[in-house]
Length: 350
Image (cartoon, rainbow, N blue to C red; front, top):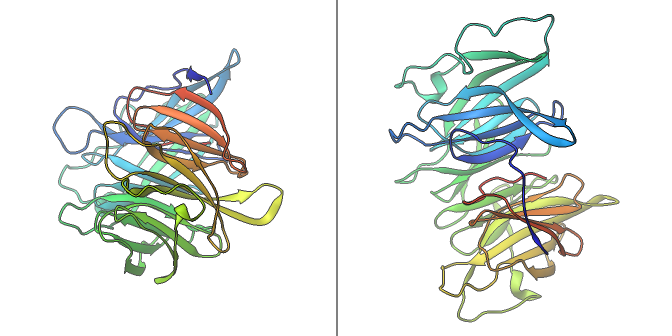
């Protein structure tokens, strides 16, 4: 694969950690920030309008939602509700976009952002909404419920995802616990210890099974809080006696042309950084019995994130050095590689 340089779509005024695309409006949602440190770097969620200009894709800022002192590190989308991982909390946001009636000016509240909250306010106390109007599209964003989801000595929510019908969401973080919450009340319905140490990623399947990967080198399949099986990617792949690997990411994907078919995809990276790094690996699994189907090397750059296209046709990988690669899901053959940016790729959409 020849490496290409991707054109810049949008430059945010803060580090970006999470991306989502709303399929109903086509809005690109980008989130991140500088955290609580007093560096002058803001924290926010940006709603971007995508359009083609002279054949090139362009993004313009439609609305900026201020998240005060909390950077959004992970993000999940369910209809008009966003679940944002902010420090040790999960904050739900609701956004509504519709066409303007006439040429209204932006409503009072702020220049681009909603009314600022007092700095001492807890996430759950923030109930305000902000409305922005721009070139015929009107967007309103409001904070819903918030809840603490991680309780380690240095608490941090690392991942969040919704189930297939968007009635539940699951969170994982540095304390190794999976917690499942009702949407939108955020009433806790399940809690169990999944890993010794941090949870790196989790994925919810349409049949209710949950896959978790952690820093303890394990990947596990759960039915509620009952362990179904653990994954062993090296059964049909390479073995390294001197190089321990850990699972970095996991995602479910459809099998094209098989409505009931399901695949699981995982990424394995070296547990320790070495001067001469060994390759990372990408594995496809049968989504019913969780046996490995095929494993392919995906280069020596450490993988930071994984995503699957809605059709299940393509996989996207991002690396800690800023590269992005596209693979065919069926064969795990690489088809595209580009230098996306000069730092770690934290979020990736297909």
